[in-house]
Each structure stands twice: as structure tokens, then as C-alpha cells.
Length: 400
Image 1 (cartoon, rainbow, N blue to C red):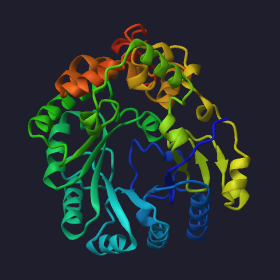
Image 2 (image 1 turned 120 degrees about the vertical axis):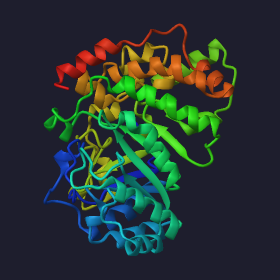
Image 3 (image 1 turned 180 degrees about the vertical axis):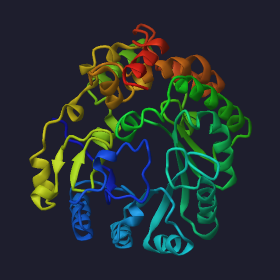
Image 4 (image 1 turned 90 degrees about the vertical axis):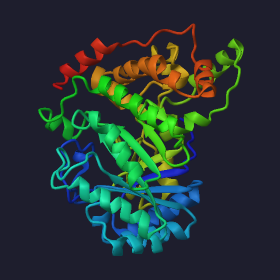
């Protein structure tokens, strides 16, 4: 088994939420009766800090703002010298709460906003226009950094350019666009979640956004991450000539890493009941901290074997030999398992998007980025396993 060195924790403070989003990936963990108490959460955080070099904790849920001990938790994390970050649906934020959170030590608020308008298709009982005002207010009355989280779907994929402009307008520093995912609430609301041309539209929207972003040189103004397609950090990559021998060595080293190496080795996801999983999309327990009274060392010693936490790239027979292995990292293992039924199979979404990314988007980026990206492509490797027709077939097979 690998020995991870976690530096980041994704911590679900509560399973309760004041909204009921149709696509909620965490619906199976909603409204539980075994959430950790504030005292238990504080004990767990303290013990995690003793065992690992934790430098950031993302507070999430459910909705963190319904947790009665939120301010106490933020203050404690801050007292340990750990950066405190929080994702929220934003509907409960007021000027008073924002000031209290800043005083407690919160550094960043990530507000989930998917649309522009008075109503939201999937986030029931939410007014997106009011949330944009709240995002702007945070920037105006505090030093808390504002990040906007947008879950992309057929409902908003053609609106992304307008959402991007709104993100700039309110002074947000970061914008993260997530794939809608196919589990949790989405499977219960398939009639609402149409995805037939979604991925193609996502590529086209990204191209239009990048034309504006690059022409206006906004990389110091707004950090962007569009899931599996573009990240601002790509613009600053150092160009380096790589020989075939060096490339072969990199591929060899990559085979011995987890396809989900960031979360597997650096970020731990902890559920509201004290159970740790690989990420929010997998529900198999790796550690059960409550079982051992939040003694982290004992819980780690009793680590439970789950395949997603022990997979190595070499265990993926096709992805490890694909020409895009070093730039795609096999896509998402949860998505691959959901679509194909095999956690070790290729991710059809990643296969499609990486092909179009290489052909249509990389050429839009600075020459240093193009050269660095192209240097990591193994020309002797296989083409992606699945094409657009395959992707659509998998989606239809799941009812989308």
C-alpha cells in the first residue's frame, strides 16, 4: 500500500442543506443522523495536523452555513496555521456573517452559481442574480477571496461565456467549471439532465471564452479552471525539450503513480460522519475516524482496502499506453466505472475531450504552452480508446 502525505483536507461539516439540487452528487450522503459534532470535528482536525503536513482545509457539506459551530471550527483551523476555504451555495450569506467569517480566519469563499437569471433550473429555490450580488458584496466589504463554482450542464453550457463575463464583473479571483457528473441526484432526475450535445458545446464555449481571456491578458485578474480542458496555470508552464529517452522514463514513473495521484496522495475527503473516502464521488471507506474515537494514527493503521485508493496507472491496460497518458491522467476513475462498468477502463468523456483539446484548443495558447504540451504526448502511444459516438452510446445506455 502507498503511504500518502496529505496536505489538503476536503471536510464535509454536515450532511444537511437548505437546498435540494437536482444533480447533487452527494445526495446519498444527505440528511444523515450521524454527523460529527463540532467537538468531534475539532478533535479530528487537531489529530490530522499532528500526523500530516496539512496546509489547507476546504469546508463543505451539505451546506456549511447550517452547521451551528462553523465559526468555532474556522477559528480553530486558523489557529493551527492552516488556510481555511469554504464552498457554499451562498443563500445564507449576509454582511454580518461574512464579517464574522473573515474575523474567524476564513480566506476564501467558493459560491456555487450556475446561471444568470431570477431562477435556477437545477438548484431549486435559488435566485442566481441575488447570489451574484452577494459575491460582489464579499469583495467590497472584506478581504476574503471570492471563487465562483459553476456546475456545467445542458442548461448552461451555451451560457458559459456570459457567466464568465459575470465572474469578471463581480471581481471574483477564481472561476472553476465542473462537469455535472452522472451519479447521485442526476440519476434520479435524468429527464431534467439532457447531455446529448453537451460535450461538444462545452468545447465550443471554452474556445470563445479563451479568445476573450487571452486577448485581454486576464491571467493575473482571474484564475480559470474548466474541468479536463483548461487551467490558467497552463499559460505559465516552462517549455522544455524532452528526448524520447526522457519521455519513456516519465511514462515509466507515471505507471507507478495513482491515476488520481492528487487526491490519493495529497487530498483526503472526509464525510460528515467521520469516514474518509478517496474523493466525493467514491463512497467506500478508507479510514473510519469515529470508530477509533478520532485517533488518526489508529485509524490509519486499520486502513481499509478499496480498489480506487490502490490503483496505479499501470493497472489501466489501455490508458497507460495511450499517447495522452501524461496530459490526461486517465480522466476520472469514478466516471469510467459508472459509464463502462469497469474502473480500469478508459473514461469515454476524457477520451473525447482530450482529442478535441489537442486539435482545437492547445493551438490557441501561447507557444510555450503548445510546445510543453506537445512534448508530453507519446507519439508511439495508442489513440484514445473511445470517440464521440462511443460517448453518446454510453450516455444513452445510462438513460441520458
